[in-house]
Length: 443
Image (tube, rainbow, N blue to C red; front, side, top):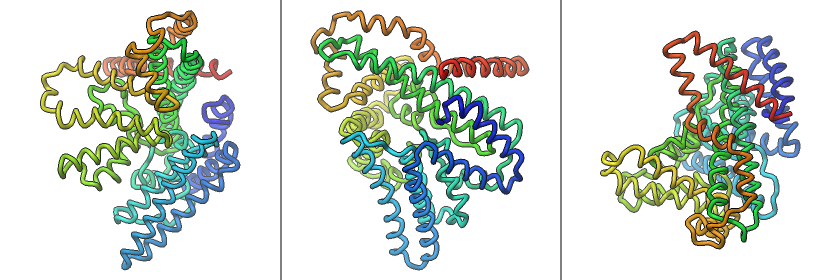
């Protein structure tokens, strides 16, 4: 019963909301913690112990660290132990998944990095360690954000857990976010992923320029709409229960530079790495070589967020080249380049990167890149299978292109600005229509 299933949308969520509204404020965190544990048990029965173990371990280590204020070396050892544990867990499951297809526990990266960030903040003294195990468990394991984030800092989420005010206004706003996220995921994201899988199934010897470009476009749309849809759903559910989660995507395909793209794509992961890795290493304040190394490390880690593999490592290195080029070479000329050209350049760089992303091996990615630029076999041929797939999905591709720039949202915002009441009615109608469409796709 995933949160993008009909049973969740029409049974589990309404019942959960009703019970939460009936409970006094002080009991709502207890209720949501229990619901999160039960939800995770339903989906990941064998991995609930792992989630509980990570939460208990970091909760206990933070308490221990708070009692060792006068022993700096011991505090540092405790922090390092906790951080290494999280890194090892993420790396282990990612590598095993690459080697033999072993299932990666749902939300492993999210709750490990959330706990890691909490431990680092406790170590620096920017926050006090949490005394309530129940509240800490809700902070680290709130079930909607386990799918794709967002990563939320302790200092942002804990005050909201302490005062979970559920109002009709927040429920309405949250429902709108949830419905739009659901539509992104099941209507656009899953459709684009199915198209990509159909294109990828075409034998390599029949692969043409059109095939590869269609594959990278389909995967670019699938990655964005699935991830941003899940994050919007998490944000919506959080609002319904009185907690405001941060945005994790902000129209990344409208970016005018690769650096801006990384600032809009997986925002909270980027922010986490910049805060706990990039800034601690000195950012670009030292020599050019140290600045380049720091950029390289953070960009590679952004790629490895999706899993540990050679291809994702190369994906990070590829983006590093353009980020360094922009920072050290193009920055002084940026004002003389038209926004349209900068957008085309950024979009081209991002789309080409997905040829590396989708390759199962470095050699497979290289083959895709060769075909993309006309150096493979049959590059100019037309395959009826490709034309059929594109013709069958042209409407989904067109809507994906329109929605990737958030044009419907911008149009609704313009209507609300000039005619607030009409805008509110239009927004409600829009949400009802896309909920009906999403329901039809889930049937």
